[in-house]
Image (cartoon, rainbow, N blue to C red; front, side):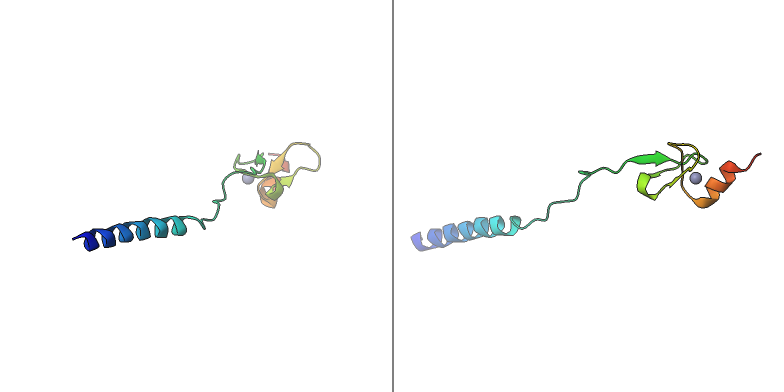
Length: 77
Ligand SMILES: [Zn+2]
């Protein structure tokens, strides 16, 4: 009976150790630690990262999501 309890105890310790070892190498999840500045398209209002947006050469702080929207916004309506 004692031997059985001993083996159960060893088994539990093994499981705990195994769980601890398994937990350790977790990759840090890429969170929004470096948020990119977002801008809105002047034509359609869609938000996109500033680095992907097209900047208006004439008007500062005015961005477009695509070349076509830049052209459409410039067109006199
Ligand atoms: Zn747009």
